[in-house]
Amino acid sequence: MDLSAEYERAKFYVALGKPAEAARILEPVAAAEPRNSEVRLELAMAYFGSAQLTNAERELRVLIERDPSDAYAHHLLGRTLERQSRLTDALTHLRIAAAMSTKPEYAEAARRVADRVGRRPPTM
Image (tube, rainbow, N blue to C red; front, top):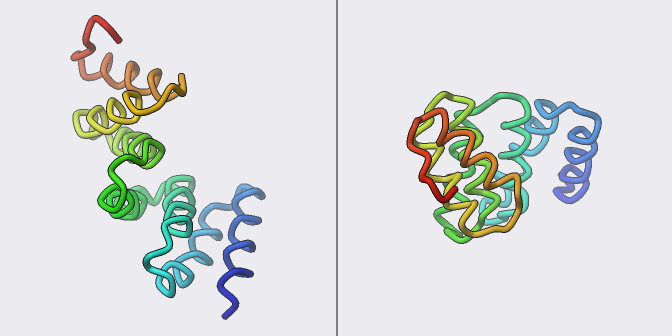
């Protein structure tokens, strides 16, 4: 198997709006390259996009364990947990992402979930 070609093929399926197919392609690539964080992130995004939220959470937790300063991984994990209605857990990761990044969508996600949880601090 040409891992690079499969990775590019999976990205093509994501672009076509077929994240479940992308995940299916990426699974053996990630298994063959378990230390490749780029592949693992693409796989997590494909899982998220195809509502395979338990799988997305698993991949994102590995990424965060490897690099706790990855704001995007925290944001996506927060969004994944939010979609599972695990709001308190989601809020933790969304706040971490918002604190590490100036991206307005990170702060907005943290505010949205904080409002739903009812624990929005006055400075957010």
